[in-house]
Image (tube, rainbow, N blue to C red):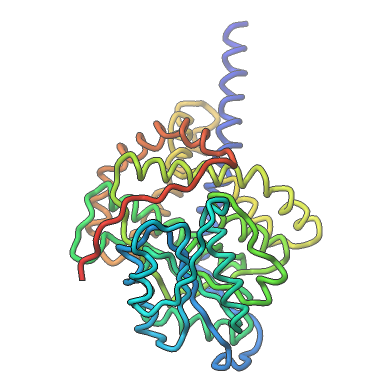
Length: 397
């Protein structure tokens, strides 16, 4: 009797592991298939006067005097006539002065009741569209826009795009080298924001919006207002776009970079807030996606799958013990094989595959830290969790 009960518990445990981990591994399979066999997605429709479109860049900034000038200058270097609106949001430092000296148009937003990046973006969008902008591009204050981002965005909207997202990656920073832990964070970021996005776009799904390097037309902003206030405002807005039947266009030939933030407790807290915010968004936004699927908007299925995907590190931790459970060994082996293919794909998209491969030596400690942070992540899933600015370092020029 006891053995039979243990068998039942074993199968129940294995079933729960499959339910919890299947979404993320299915996402990885789709991403790999899209990168290997699909064509890149792009703007739909006919080219229609792209050069006549009026573009504006919005830079949300909270106490970013160290990096904001570099962000503005990176845009001005490739599109001198495009206005760059810097929203100095509840700043107590020299952000406004630094932005103005770099050529930005500073919009002060001092209101203790308006907190979070979404509030700054709404203010910037309203001013830019009010000044006549047809398309609003978003660049974080800690990011650098590479040559071609503005031009590629203009072309995409000229062809009929409603929203775009370019490659958004992290780097160690000019003149700096990331340690193995930092390089693993860069790899994880590249996997989420590049490999998975490319795969989705190639298969006809919406690649996502990732906080920096995206753009929205004024028409899109009217039809789907940017009114979310969660920690993961970009994810929440993307869900609303997909639920409304829109598909973000992927710009594979353009990119923006953000310098890797210093590690430590502050960075761990920020990551926990982001993952907790995703958990809260999954709970709150799923019903809208289900309704979209029932109305025939099939792309929403993939977005729903992504929304309920566990972080890969935690999924792997759940799957590995499953290798010891009779009846679930094949599933576990396939999941680990998919993970290996995914890591290989992420490394292949980088410029230093040798260093990236060596960084995998630190993967066990990386995964262990993620597991330790699980309780913190769950606590951060509440809507009242705040976004806390991470420490910045002076860029080297």
